[in-house]
Amino acid sequence: MDCIFCKIVKGEIPSTKIYEDEQVYVFADIAPTAPIHWLLIPKEHISGANAITAENSGVVAHIYEVIAKLAKEHGFAEGFRVVTNCGEDAGQSVFHLHFHLLAGRKLAWPAG
Ligand code: AMP
Image 1 (cartoon, rainbow, N blue to C red):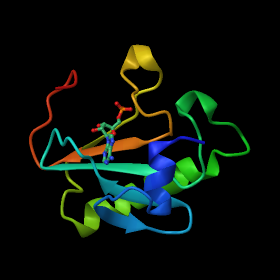
Image 2 (tube, protein in one colour; image 1 turned 135 degrees about the vertical axis):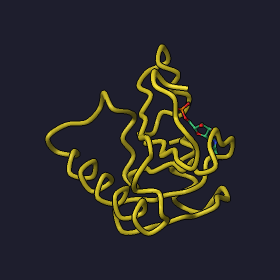
Image 3 (cartoon, rainbow, N blue to C red; image 1 turned 90 degrees about the vertical axis):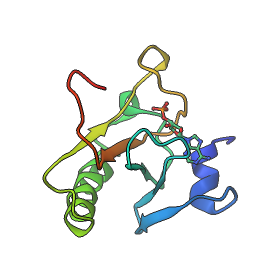
């Protein structure tokens, strides 16, 4: 499968690793929009939020546990945003489920 994020998990494409365990890989976004802009991805290929099922959803809960842990460890637990774009209409450009983790500046809402 020609998936850029699967290749990052396998080390075939370089990335700036933030965290890794048996289920999840976390790395810096190549085009950051905040001082902290990381991507959390399941190591298993899931194409997007619209492909989450009862069989594969466990990793989503795990990813949110990792987010809370990283936020505490890196000192931004008081303010961060998690975003998942799903589908081309929402701006998804890589079709491997990922969670943008944004922090380190004031984040406007609606998103900005
Ligand atoms: P989305 O547009 O929501 O699908 O998000 C995809 C994200 O992946 C974008 O923010 C890109 O900047 C990021 N991205 C694409 N290729 C790479 C890469 N090789 N390393 C790190 N981030 C990447």
